[in-house]
Amino acid sequence: MASHKALSLAFDELETLQAAWMPQLEQGGIFVPTDERYALGERVYLLLRLPDEGERIPVSGVVAWVSPPGVSGRRAAGIGVHFDAAEHALRLRIERLLDGLGTPSRSGYTF
Image (tube, rainbow, N blue to C red; front, side):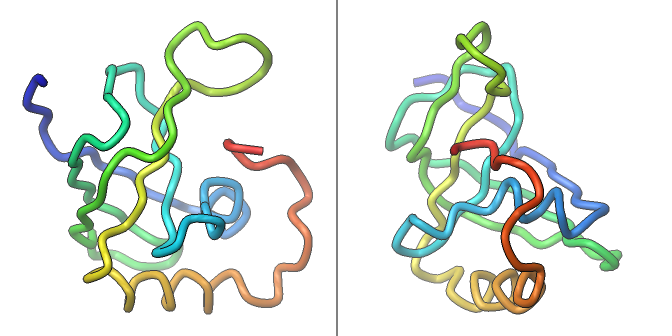
């Protein structure tokens, strides 16, 4: 498999983070829009910036979802990254940020 650089993803709004969040994954995960091709199970590294935070957080995980470029419907091209177990504190941080937002006002990237 080809080597990929770290992907950078910045969330400016909680609603966008909520749409990208993948709580159905055991360790949590995030959808990353990209036109690059990745394979399921491929290791990836992210630099993630959460809403109202200045620092980028390094995150590691594996590809658990693939929406290739040109996918039918209104789905965005990208990958779902399942966080490594070591990212448990990040999962809790994201869940705290999203707590209280209620039901998403729009569909997520993966549902």
